[in-house]
Amino acid sequence: MDSHFRILLVDGDNANLLVMQQILDSAHEVEFAFTAREAAFKLATSSFDLIISGYDLPDMTLPDFFSSIRRITSPRELPIIVMSDDDDPAVEENSFRLGAQDFISKNSRIGVIERRIMRVLELYQCRADMEQRYQEQEEKIEKIRQNIVEAFASIIEGRDQLTGMHIQRTASYVSMVVQGLVRNGYYAGELEDEAVCEAIVQSAPLHDIGKIAVSDMILLKPGRLTHEEFEIMKQHARIGGRMIEETLKSIEKPLILRTAVDMATHHHEKWNGKGYPDGLRGEQIPLCARVMAIADVFDALVSKRCYKEAFSYDRSFEIIREESGQHFDPLIAEVFLSMKDEIIRMSESWALGENEDLCCLG
Ligand SMILES: [Fe+2]
Image 1 (cartoon, rainbow, N blue to C red):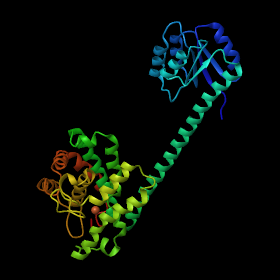
Image 2: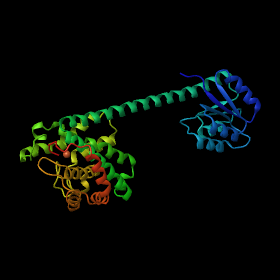
Image 3: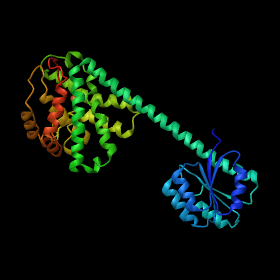
């Protein structure tokens, strides 16, 4: 453990400062301030591991001094020890009430003063080390999460390149729609939380993950699916939700996990209740899934399939308008339609790198 610390001593009494200097100077780097204002200036221009302050300062009350310090730095980052030769218990109590991490009587033995100071410093060092380790763990988990998402996406792309591209395009539309909803103030109760918006966008690439479990015979069939085959294909929604739950539950943040599961499970629900797998209607359908539904269908409309040509942009937007309140959430459809030019630009940018000859089902 690093035992060399930077300490700011604040005391209007020169004799006190000299005594404390003798105690601390050999082991630590010590700076002095004779007034609270001088201390505040030093804090604003330099970093310290600890403040040791006298109880009575010449230019400021102790509560005001604490307030000025806390405007610069938080108690988590910088501990304060108050020292006084006043043995009135109210002085000690008042110091703790103001937020001091310790109170030391100047009448204590030097060894006791040294140990009390080191105890506070070591405690803070310990906490900083733990926070850093926690942060490193969080970063590692985030990396694992990203790797899993990328691995899933590449597995899908490996089996079915068109679905792989579909995942990327729909993710970009989802991001645009979420931004549009926020701009319009729609569903502000949910979307005013930036973490919710991020969770929706981050979950988008996983929405069709359940297609991994659909056989090649059905997934890659060059033509329309039979009723039975379509029933099997429909299972990808529920399977996808379960896969995400099973795979990511131990490492994913609860909000992202919930959003990704909801989006995968419910992106084929319809506003009018005629979708699958649960026939949810209206706002029973999670918002993330309602956003994905419109991105998903739009991408299928403007893409060429072996059983159909790509619809024109005008016809595709017309269908989105017709399906507002039927398939789609009317507010989301309104935002989508209002972003027609941006969406077309995004779609065309994807089309530049797309292999139109691939044949499979969306
Ligand atoms: Fe799907």
